[in-house]
Image (cartoon, rainbow, N blue to C red):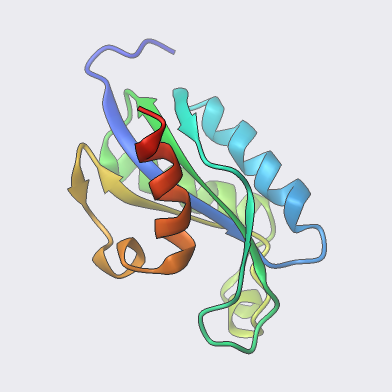
Length: 130
């Protein structure tokens, strides 16, 4: 993929299913096909925001891509669906994959996620790698 007119995206990836590590790694591989992963945080445990659902494994990546914000968000939805995420699974508290573009070209697109510990932990890691 040509990275002409490269955009940068900070994407938070997470899963709380029994095979969560495999799902997070599969998502990282899927995002690598959409551009170039410039940085990646460690993969770390994080409690569910609601304190009820199973804990998540999360990671944060910095992706350089030729895709627009809308195109990349659509790809996130496709990658989530391919991993088995449905509205019903989310309602049951089972999230095979969650992938959100939190920052795009240095603009915070998801302020709520930006402030959450599951994002800030990984984001701090990729920011301090510079």
